[in-house]
Length: 309
Image 1 (cartoon, one colour):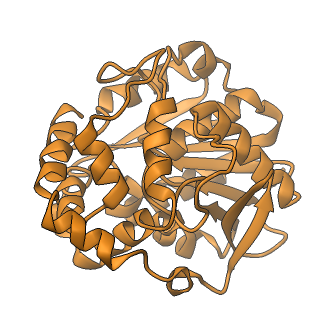
Image 2: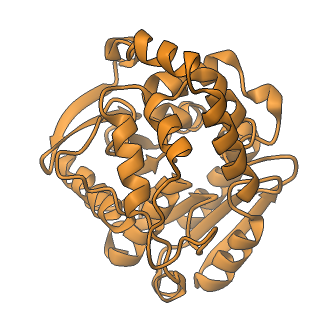
């Protein structure tokens, strides 16, 4: 994680001047280029949210939340594989993707957890399988802790949980170079940062960098990223983790440079009914890096839970 922060700072400084000017001059891409037939733009609890729903209407629902600066496209592989048997629901977190910034600035982890419930309410979903990666995973497990009666099963991919890099009970404002990077998202700087998210550099393709960058540069998102960090805390999670009643599957990459796999081991020990699977050669986004392996493990886990009952 420390290496990632240093590289983010270096990348941000390198992106200053001409690259920043170029990124700003280009402006954000048209949102329509990323809208799919299954997308809905909904008003949820006073915010505009992009939601994508796939799969049979009567199938068990699974709600998936992506990580920081990413968008719902992060779950493309899982959605394609699971939609035959599940009602797959994913949405752009507030201040991300095509949802855009929240007028009420509800960016703290607990507010994101509550908003997951708001999305479920808006869609008429009382109970669901809930999953998330990184920031989305943090929201997912906190939602499960606060709402045990609404979570059939919990699937976490390298979620935030334990204090790290000085972030604990109080937030740390982003250094100016990092804030500049988040506000401008020049693709050369983003490519450097993403190579520390994925365990295999070959996965940091031009297409993937462009999509993430395009989403980061949507109007208002850059400022929302900065505000999210300014509200981000990681207090001792264990009292809440121990209260989670849902059966839980935790997936982690052995080469995760953002959050150490030791956090996954600690989570698995703290949650009463949890199982941890670690993938060799995989970084922070195992669902993107090892889709076949993670999907097979998720399917086996969900089959064992009988979530439709």
